[in-house]
Figure 1 (spheres, rainbow, N blue to C red):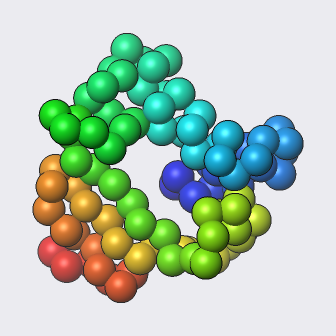
Figure 2: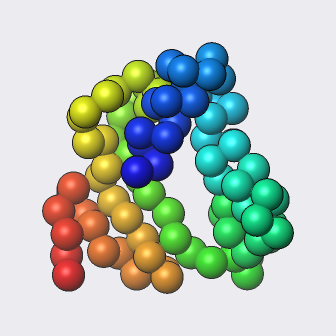
Length: 87
């Protein structure tokens, strides 16, 4: 659960939401030798992403138990819209 990981990094480790998102995406990709393929929005990278519903990315780390997922794209296909599974 990406949202929980970001929240724990903010609350438990003192990271800012931006630092937590960076660590959970590009940082994790680098740690696993997958930089350029995952953890980034760039041409040629795998297109898996989550769009959270919030006014500001800084809110993400402070919502325990609240599902903020609005959309999910997996392999370039929309699979969650308005928080509801499409498939």
